[in-house]
Length: 227
Image 1 (cartoon, one colour):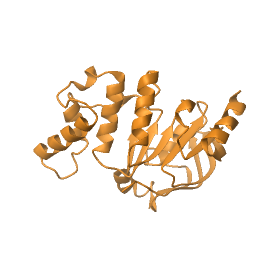
Image 2 (spheres, rainbow, N blue to C red):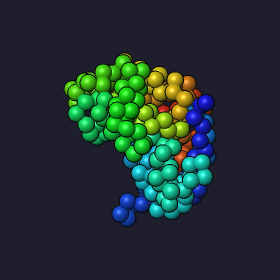
Image 3 (spheres, rainbow, N blue to C red):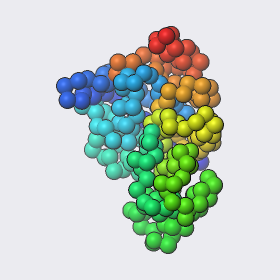
Image 4 (cartoon, helix red, strand yellow):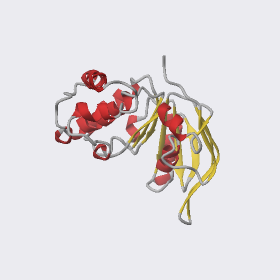
């Protein structure tokens, strides 16, 4: 079954210290492939991090399948996985297998079963569970970070600029991999040429959503905005 959640933002705003970074965001996201684009500092990453409660809004509410990310964050994170820009920030164990198995530490599975499940998921993406995690290539590290989320089988996968540190070939490979997953994807990216097959693109500027459309018109608006 395809992952499909309902993600709702209701009059959401957020302030860091005294600086407003997100204002008046009202959204309902239920498409399978959604992208956030915008210049650095536009608020897109902050909004993405609200989906699994990494950032709690200063005003308004964010809900995933009816669960409030502020008061029910643990339940939300069982449904929403998060992949960061730099995979080294997610890799915490010596080998690829141990790193993915670490994600299952609260699953109730035995150590043996966690290792077996980790090896199974890594094998699907051509990674050796015995390989030292920090000696993987950049593309392989990002795959490892993805596997550490997929082993939990979330319904939603939020990816915050996951292709930034990758070369063009690995960017395309990683994005194609995302589009083949059953999970609902929310992708924050500067790589506009990777978004042709997405269902919806939201353009952020100065903490607000300024365009919300199919890829071609949304990206045309964004290019005119920054051009």
